[in-house]
Image 1: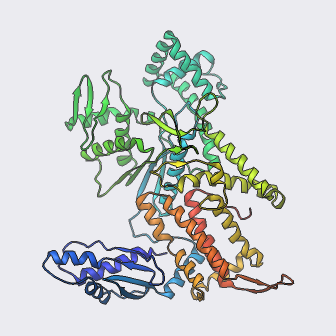
Image 2: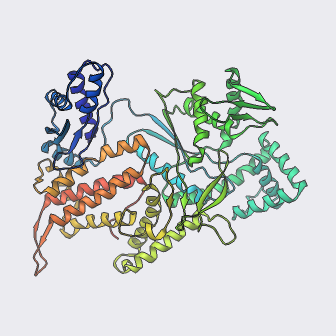
Image 3: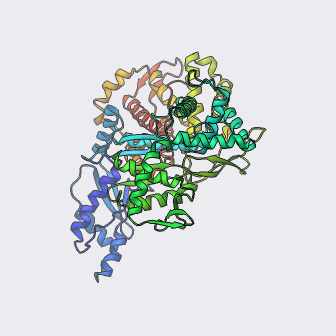
Length: 611
């Protein structure tokens, strides 16, 4: 499928370049969706801006005349039916009907796909989720995991090679504390794997001893030294603790169907840091103050501390080693870090130093921090808790009601369990347990529960805060996953009602380039469906999944208009027997399902055929 906005932009760019050669630089063309469909499908609004540029050169030409010149010099195209000029110089564009039918046929035969220029695909390294070893995942890890996975899915759709990295916190002083506690509780750990089932309790026990017992604290620091020096017994103990965490993390990832995350913890970069520091030192960027080694990034208010006064490294050091490794060893052409917005200045400083060191330049490598806001309780109040993030300790604000009675942050697994329970109750309230088989009911329950949790996050602009409410996200009205999943199953059921098989639709799709689109609502739906490439490319540029959610919700609304006005299956009102099947409308239903399928796949939501 073609990105219509991009194709029109290229077309008008050619005309403007040939029409106004005095404009030395490449003029940025503005092509947007027409807000009033009766005037056209798209609109080019460049004439007004060109008037100003020409005036600066001493050339007086009214916007309407400029618009007329642009239209006159447009190259021939098989996807533009006509152009007309409105007002002072707005160019309204109407798409060619044959192009529209071919684009729709492409969806029906090949599914949603994009056209790639040769060599445009890059290796994408995306860093997300990032829980801490020896601590259970909690609600604070939800946003990074969901947003990161969606963006990774999007880049894979566009044909890029995507490496999903989980930058877990698996190194530091706390591991000396944990290892010391492990050797006391399970002295035979080298021969028999310790039965640590409750990792959170194990961590709390070791932390209490660390805080209360000076002798234990001394042993803990000794364990850190032995671990970092590579002592095999302490490495084994460390691996045992890490393995328990990995298994717990994976249970969460499996439930949410998170893509194949490769663990790449802080420990991975430990041996790379001395070389990176030496390189930065030789460049003359390091300043020594009060025994600390600092780097002052351009445009940053605060310096990066690369070596502490006691000679230890920091998260600044490991993140500098991390970005260099991802550029040089991983050959990343696009690097994306998905963390809360509070870390934006930190990553901006890291990127600034990396660029100053010549590790990358913006012309060849895209490096971005994908930040996100906090989650609010339904009372709009915030509750603070501390998260030992893999990059550095920070205070995160999270849902007030997501606190246990003891004041602890609720585990992510408990949040997912609550979602499953509420979804089950909702489905049973609607009587779905009587209409569906056990397997179908369980599939629907999982689809709606996890889909609603993901969509509630993704449908909001990630940089804004949002209110978490199970009641709202499970509502089957409005812009929710529940509504969209129900809409999807209704569309899927239309062909079943018509008793038209998938094979019959596939056969009919081969001739769909001659679909009659006579009804205005048929035409509106067809035009909306072929917009999906431009929407996906915009999301890829901005890294804002809510734009895709908005499109998906609007698509469901446009389809409802079509279905309410255009009978797909006509039945005898008395007998209920099928009198007529409108195959071309069933194909429009099928194209809608294909587009929704692809959107759901990128969002990480699994639809079901019956609900």
